[in-house]
Length: 273
Image: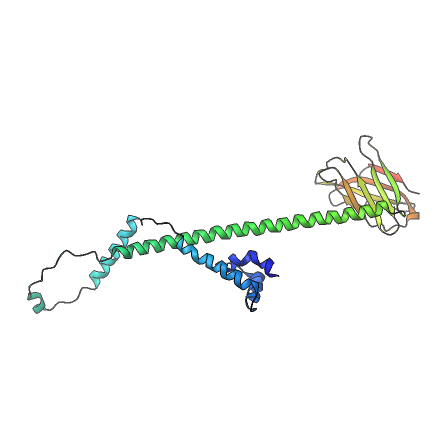
């Protein structure tokens, strides 16, 4: 991976949550003198370190202070020194008012530390959740981009077959006159392009299947396809039957995944030879 690709993972690495191949890749980059990732990870670590200074000022709960004071009293009781009879006979010196055994600044510091720790943990959890969601969105965007690229490549192939002077156009007429026509373009080398517009929506459990009907023998499956959300069809499928042996083209409505042989009446058909 490049430094640009790893830039989105700097914060995860600084937080110590990056794992697997991505962590190994980051470690390899950080081991290279002058690598761009060294500066990026350093900035991410600085940002994580600043979280400890971001905790808002707040009074600790009264219950927390009480627990701390009780713990100090119990510790002091256990550490009471043994006094000899002579020392007991001595008059006790007068002392002024006793100060609190646990200074104010100490329990305030403990409370502040607890607040900072809780805030940091919450911030880390929030950032981890946001990073996971961002990576999920990035993967989804990459998948959508790949789907669009595949569709563009298919459209180019369809255009090449349609515009080739070696292609033979064939019109598949619908048995139902309310249905649109399906166009086929049979090329001797590039295969067969299929196009259609204003096709009806099909349930996911059903599919359209294109068949070559040879002069002799059973129908041969060419492709299965679904109209898109706009009711359009555009695809190129390989043809394994020589052109001079094709008697007709036909389309049937089949279960999802297609069938070895037609299971419903022909919905579109065109004679070829």
